[in-house]
Length: 120
Length: 285
Image (cartoon, rainbow over all chains, first blue to last red; front, top):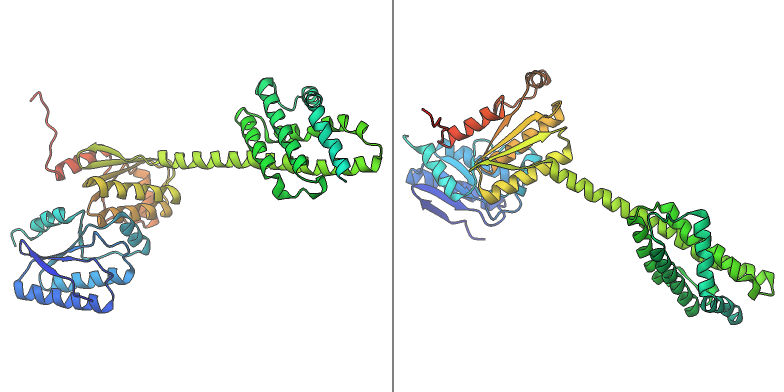
């Protein structure tokens, strides 16, 4: 059970979620992201979920928590690479994913993030 | 017992043509199979095939021992015959009557072979049972065939009912005509999201000017679709909201405020172009 790698790209924090985010892993991810933002002053967190096939309400809630905590520290959160079936499941479950930006892929996500954080 | 068995077999082998002739005569008199739909050469070919299959079944088994499992081969030829007639527009009942009328032909040929009336009766009863089974089977096959056709057409109709059109680079349009029910909404969402995932389009315009009424269910389907599109990182615009529809939505308490809406498709398209940093220019000026 290794921690997910946190990568810095263009001053943003990139997390690629490739395994099931269970309790402990999600908690620690949240903590590590917050610490990283505090340390580096990063203005954005990009979470890549292109390999995630199942996203349940727990994981959705965890993502909202991460986004809320990051926002308090002055960073935007962007979810990239969501699969169609995941998007459909989320809306059926009624998950709003509040406070989270979304983009089709990492490329678009980075571009959008640059726009969002420009001039601030 | 084997001796009786042979009478039928002998009749089927030696009087084959006679039986077929009786069968056709009966057909012609009753017009069960319409000669305008199935030509007589085809009819004769199928009838002969069935009769031979029937003969080989009786050859392989005691008439009294024949079980449902032994009928498989006969059923296979019956299936192909039934489908053949069905494709040519015969009704299921007529196809069933066609096979059942073989009884009449056999009844014309068999009696002279038997000296004992009771024997004849029991043999005829056994044959009747097999033919009745085939008759019902015919019916089942044709009805199944028709149901399959209906299902296929329904699927095609659903496919056709939600076109996803590329209007410009990065702009998709989904004109919805008619009521947006659950099945259609689901197909629409699936197709739109899959399209966005594969082509990376940035905008989807859903035009609902062809939707007669928007109730809470329709609105819920729309909201889900819009939200799913947003989650995929694309933007959605709803256009074609007529004044009365807009009023109904407000009075129903449907809230689309988190989504972009425009009156006409043209307005929506203009907004998309604007957001993409594109503009339409008048060449004359």
